[in-house]
Amino acid sequence: MKKYKWFIIIFNLVLLLVYFNYSVMEKETLLKNGQPVLLKLAPVDPRSLIQGDYMSLRYDIVNNINVEKIPTRGYCVVKLDSKGVAQRVRFQKDATPLKTGEYLIKYTSPNGWSINIGAESFFFQEGHAEKYSKAAYGGIKTDKDGNSLLIGLYDDHLKLIQ
Image (cartoon, rainbow, N blue to C red):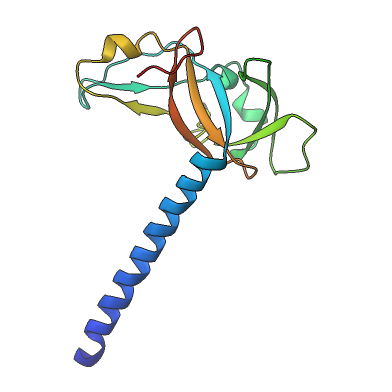
């Protein structure tokens, strides 16, 4: 067994590094080629006592949904208005063919009473809470498979807050 111990350790390390690099590559591809989508934010509290300056994000497109009537995992189908702001069309279980101008955003409902689209937290530098408290939109990029990545927060005038 001693003979194979180092081989197993090195093999697992290489496997972990390959997986990590693949994951980073997927995110970079999504940032580069993803469809930008703005999601209207529901009211949020821009502070967390435990984690410091942090914002828990809630999106308007998942408000007023009877969570019991939709699958626990699936896709929120959205259409973009002329400003690039997402309007909810429907929820569906699979990535069936979409109509022109529709985009997928994967969601889960882990607890049966709320919906998560994968970008529910935004951390920012300490002391910048007031600047981000004016956020009205969350900007994400999404791909054809419904994977999404938060790219920033936007104000009422659809300008990225920096």
